[in-house]
Length: 210
Ligand SMILES: C[S@@+](CC[C@H](N)C(=O)[O-])C[C@H]1O[C@@H](n2cnc3c(N)ncnc32)[C@H](O)[C@@H]1O
Image (cartoon, rainbow, N blue to C red; front, side, top):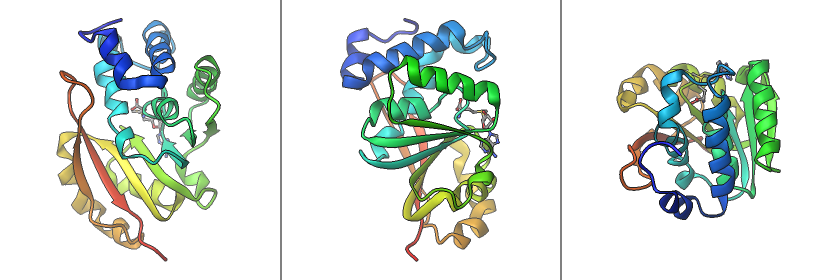
């Protein structure tokens, strides 16, 4: 366990998902740097910067349906979502083979039965999905991310992405692509998890009906 969080507080927040999420945090801290998934400075802040940051998006996600996480990397937020939304189907799209191997290994280690790992760039899966939600964290600026991910979203589906505090500045450059996909005006949400954890900025926008 790193950082300042009491196990009891984390366990209460994550509920039934805690054993899987806790194991994931452990595996990331033991293997993450070695396998080139996270930098050495991240080891001491895996809960705050990565697990809780990822978990912050879950409050906006449906219990069921297909959630596609683009550029999952080490499994953030994708594996955290899968643990916390066991009745949803979670698809992780990641181009790097080494990372896909890790994602498959972790899916098994954490005992998750609702995860499918797809190797490739999001653009290669255009029209392959009718996702209810697309999520992403630290993958690209909104303009590019929207071009890659919006074709994966069904009409009425939602783009729900974790962003930095400067997200407002990314909206204007993305205006054209958001309009093309009839996206609703993006909402910027401040998501909280447990007391003392850093808040997370989430951008949400819904694809218009046909
Ligand atoms: C900076 S990492 C972030 C990983 C993870 N989401 C996180 O927050 O720790 C960006 C990830 O996006 C992946 N990526 C880059 N371009 C992509 C694309 N066009 N489609 C899907 N994934 C992509 C990279 O391979 C990498 O794993």
